[in-house]
Amino acid sequence: MERIGCVVMAAGNARRFESNKLAAEFDGKPLIRHALETVPQAIETVVVTQYPQVARMAEEFGFACVENPHPDWGISYTIRLGTRQLSHCDAIVYLVSDQPMLKRASVEAVAETWRKNPDKIVGLGHGGKRGNPCIFPKKFYPELMELEEDAGGNTVIRRHLEDLLLVEAERLELTDVDTPKALEDLRQQAQKRPE
Image (cartoon, rainbow, N blue to C red):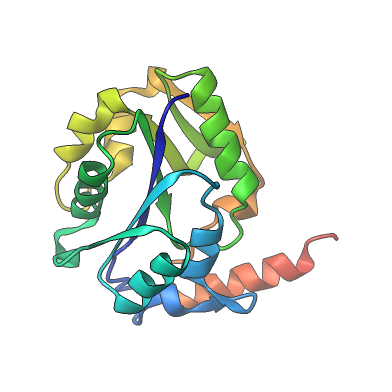
């Protein structure tokens, strides 16, 4: 059985949110808890963060934690820290922490699709448009480790579009919240969904 790791990226400064976005609540829970709850069971997980409260919550879930002392260096440094920690894995799921509607079943579907296509990058998408999370097989780790500043996995994917597979998900699952208004808009959209 292939070993899959998961990097939960929870180190950003969230400048557009103007406060610690991960502590903002959606449906009665902070965004970071929503993210941690989507990690499939039995996947080795590393949470990369600058926030002590996030580190404490990661421990509560039984996840390893890596401190990012330089969040101002951009998402690439978070990716590097997490990839280094999980380099023994055959593939790594990179999970952002600001998609509160994301379901664990969707993350599991990404992992399962990768197991059937172990040479491919697999991402969640809607209507052909890619979102997060994405899983990268080991052969892409060197490129991920070379990313700089705010270049993320998108940079690697754009070089290898022929290697990308998408798993269809509901649009709201892919919605991230970068501002308080975006969070409020998502709350309203979630309330309007049919039961």
